[in-house]
Length: 119
Image (cartoon, rainbow, N blue to C red; front, side):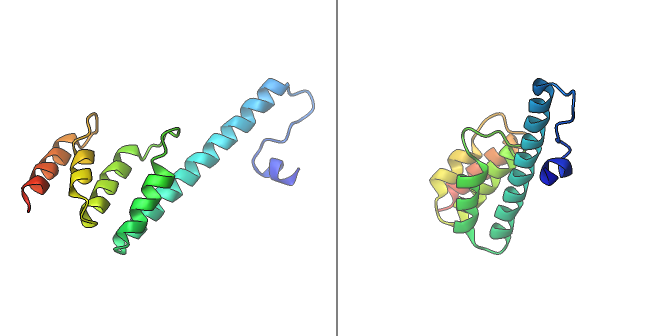
């Protein structure tokens, strides 16, 4: 009951079950978004501390899940490619850099070309 009050979803008298269910769904959605955001930033910390394998793991297994939408999708794919590049997985990094529909698509394609040139 206290947790419901803290999240503002305590069902008051006279509130229909449809409205209450919507309130619960909204709070759940906000919590998922918060968790996804925190997870994305934790993956960046892994990258910045040169733990590229952990950054890749966080991005692949927690941020870029196929059944989950994320506001960090494009940035996470870019940072996954950067991690793969540092781990020596150039072919896979190039594939990610070449993905379409990304706001930084042109820069990513330039990076892919440069990476493909390096022996």
